[in-house]
Image 1 (cartoon, helix red, strand yellow):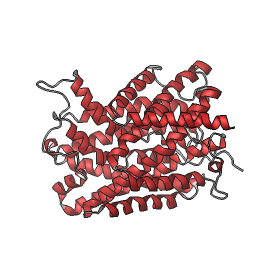
Image 2 (spheres, helix red, strand yellow; image 1 turned 120 degrees about the vertical axis):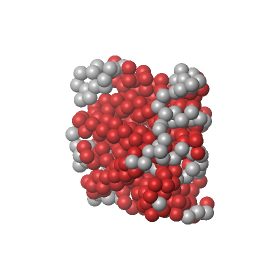
Image 3 (cartoon, one colour; image 1 turned 90 degrees about the vertical axis):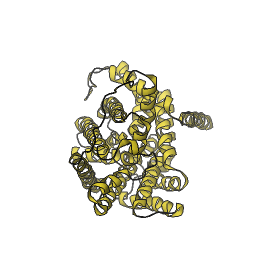
Image 4 (spheres, helix red, strand yellow; image 1 turned 180 degrees about the horizontal axis):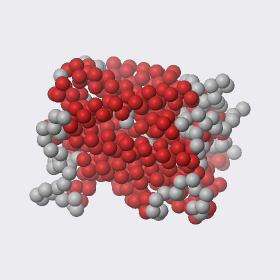
Length: 436
């Protein structure tokens, strides 16, 4: 017998920590060299600014929805309510459908990135890398197989490691700047050219990936204390805090290492940066800390996503076993087992660059753009009275968010595959409906 998950034990500090450790996984460290190498004029910082603006616009949508509907599953419930009885069932099913594929890919990206960064300490064979990535998923599974209040405390510790590590990197770089970072175009360069924005779009596909996770608290809506206040606050604190840290980290690292020398395939740029400043021992320490950050992010990702199939199952829109809660620890253990099992398999099958692009392509239409439309539908149905949080300057953030996501989808090499998966999901939905 399943019961709704409304065990509100996570406070603002813990919620913000969960968001931030989800955002700052291995992402900013492994995508930094790719982003820098795309700009032959040194204006790479604008890809990170673009990513922050994207997160902020989208964060207002998440905040309005999350504060009003603080339920386990996040987007699943937002779609279910916003698109009405018929449309809501289809859209929420499509979200769970793509999540069942996309969430294990997110797990795989973190574990693969971890294994690649570990190679700083010595070359790993293909088999050894896969053993590390797969073993990491198993370890996270065992850590999450416990009560939510214990997890909240673990998240604060992990969040502290994340912040302190990035601050160390920033301070080290700022104290040893060797060349300036370009913020404005010069000569024949201009902001107002198609070529510049094409490069920004291509690079921002990776920087946006590094920002993803500011909404993780919405997936845990049924477990957040005072959700009408803490969900929006945790989202905006996370976005603003991480955006500042990312910008300063890029300025610090690339103020020491010439951007012209950076190759897209550099595996551990930050470790090389620290080795150049303080030697091998410091580089080894920062590598260990980055690996801790990657592990922390994987922890937060699995925690949030494990609530989505559970939310769909208790609503009768997914397989019934996913609705089960652990009899004593009160968490959706079936969902956790399946998500980690698929993540384990995907970590053995795919490469990191492919996984990152595929993740964003799958989520843009069914999740991010659909939520923007959902906010508009809900405002038309119920108005804005009674909303615990009202986004600023509505509907401008929604319009800007939709335009940005459309731009990023156009630039994504896996856009076709994301659309194909959504169409297959729609076919499965209507086929299962006919069988009932």
